[in-house]
Image 1 (cartoon, helix red, strand yellow):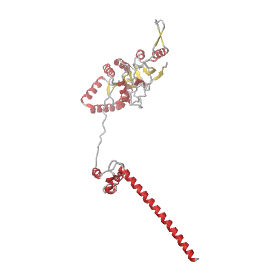
Image 2: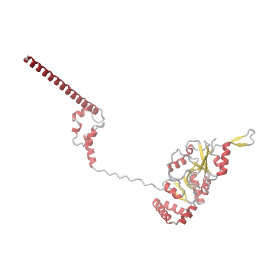
Image 3: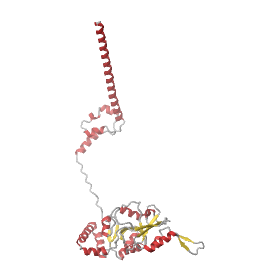
Image 4: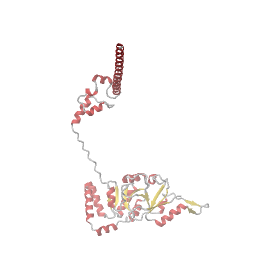
Length: 358
């Protein structure tokens, strides 16, 4: 009995050891197989890269051993799709050791704006400038406007660029009379059957009543546009054009000298406060190619400014503007009040808008 029990114990121990050997062998096989798979996937990934083929990698051994001088950053780059050779890494080490100083000097903006007087010869030049698709800023009874040729697409684009204004915002066209605005509106007359008399349409009657009552003045009238003659950019693609007749004598004289309708939003960068003085316009648009009509400036000062700008360039012009600022700071309150009387932008807000729809 004892021998039989001892024999059974030995058999159980042998069975236990046999199971342990099987477990160890299976785990080791799984471990080695997984390692082989990882190595194979890594070599396959590197073999498909753009830099070196698989044969080169096998000849040189592991990447991190073939580059003993490589830094930690280069070792990270080895496992990227683009590999580095020994020559390129040595070149990078040599260039990285040398300090590179790149000095970028910001381009100074050049002052392009010019202030002109409100005299008749000056307004004549400004009117000619407007007819040639250039920009002129002028005062109205509300705020300063940035004017351009209202029927020229290129001139209108200059206004949007100078103001940094989105094209989704339409512009207001300034005219002197109702007849000038009627050419831009699509308000046709209704002719009777016998063709002896013509009766105005309801829209035309409304436009004629509004203009005869409130023009000239700060009232903007929006009506359907005469599409063949009005550029779509000035209407923001809406099919409606806004017109108004300013009451400011300088604005009316400028429209007359230009001989064309003038599109003029407020003379400031988009989102800024609307200007009521020439200096306000200068602060916002002095780096744009625009003439600014200044009622405070005399003809002598305009001639001096023109000579200084032509002979001595922008440095002299900048110093002159700084001197003007200092002089304005020294003016008394009474002198300031007298100067503000010469400027007719008394409202300081945009005009009232009314829309006439068919």
